[in-house]
Length: 227
Image (cartoon, rainbow, N blue to C red):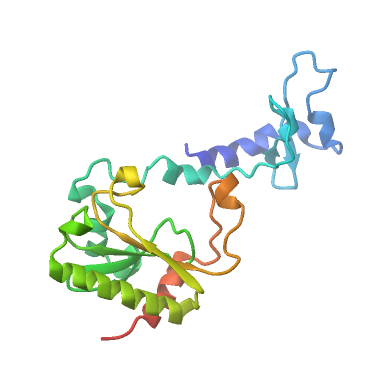
């Protein structure tokens, strides 16, 4: 059972005791509850249990909690390769699949571009060599030149597709530097707009993305300069 399944399956049972209750605060622990058992509270008609921060141990604060259990797939690394071998590498497997399935927007001779499955912003692209190599300094000069050319073309395509006001461009070399998949070199191109940052990444490890990956990919493919 996944975290999402637990939330969906448990909510009706947890909130059964609250059916018909109009005073939700009556379900919170009180002095009349000798065992001090905290009961779930329900919010709205969807039956999702909600607990007030004041019910927890420690000093209460003024924050509500937005739980995002589906993000554990990324945090726990369920989609990451267990080894550095190319047969498990998603960047080696992607070119073997159809472009729409693998979210590839461009295929070059030595380098390809694809959408980031876990984007920081809408239109977040990754530039990768076909070769399973980890360090930028190990690229052949011809591949390195194409790597730069594809990066430049991707920036032009993103500007035409969604008119970003800036970009974050860079790569993390090695796990210690923050690379999620350190065994296969990949460069990030993240479009930026004024006002695109909010509190979600800071307090909930959640990024709000306003556009589906497939829709963003279609726009970028259409804006990519034709040879």
